[in-house]
Length: 96
Image (cartoon, rainbow, N blue to C red; front, side):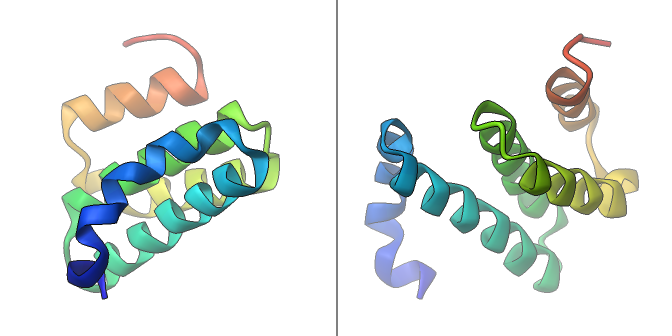
């Protein structure tokens, strides 16, 4: 399915100005992260989780923010230094 729509996936970032499409974008990123983790693509899953976390935070969707934080924490030990820095920047609002 991802291969079929891969050309359109890049356009998703342009949806963020519309609340309904932005929510769909958020849900897509979360489910893509779950898919990546399930298929043992941990770095990609962490990347998608960070994208989802950033969107949820911007949209003030606190329940989704909590889900993203929980998901990131589950795989935190696999995160790169860059991913940990990005995570801290979104969650705490400061760089390490």
